[in-house]
Amino acid sequence: MRYDLLKLKKFETDAECSERNQKIIRALEKEHKLSKVVGQCIKGCEPFSRCQHILCSHCKREFRLQYVSKICEFLARQKSESCIYAVTLLEPLDASSTKVIDIAKLKNTLYQRLKRLFGNEVIVIGGFDISLNTDAKNSWKPFFHPHWHLIFITKLDAQYVRERLKHYYHQTDIIKRPVRVVKVNSYKRAVSYMFSPYFSKRVRFLNTKRKGRNPFYDGKEYKLNSIEICKLAKKLMHNKVQDMLFLYGGRKYRSSSKEKSVNDFEFKITQ
Image (cartoon, rainbow, N blue to C red):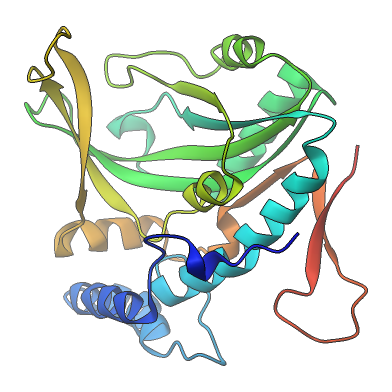
């Protein structure tokens, strides 16, 4: 089964990516080191010589086009034997524990947690994401909050998966819903959501305008400004776009095709 991600509604265009990159480059020019290490890298990104930096919009777009379709094909091969869930995990962190963002360390921690919780009962594929977490009433110091958008392939019940994950991903004063587990109905929508086209800012506020419902905490997304882009660039200065990919119970293998294509790979189960 083939998936044409370009036909997915609201998928970013080349023009949008160029506009985002220009904004990032202009923001980084305000700090010499960031401009030299990250800004020049993104500025020199070309269609046939991509920079692969995690902040580059063009590289993230190509990553999504390559990987999302392959993951959809992989999921389609598993659906007859297992349940497929979209899982979002919010790390129980705050400003004091996110001064340094080490994606490799976070991925290893997630891998070890899944191993202890589920062993060989789940196959997980997904992506790293990060957003500037703020509160409308300044209830906490803003911080860049790492989190995960994952796909679980398993025969386990959704409620069981949810309760097991809460052992590590628990509720805090900042994080009211650390674990979200829902059944996947659309592969393209669920998988494209795993890898965000850009990193953003999320503002929490108390929603009191929903009729027939008590006030509840909600969130609204905004684009990062120049100062916030620089702060994020310092944390992800040396990360590549491929660092977003997370795998548990599966691996990426090179295809047997003789053609040297950027899509010359596939995902397979290893357990």
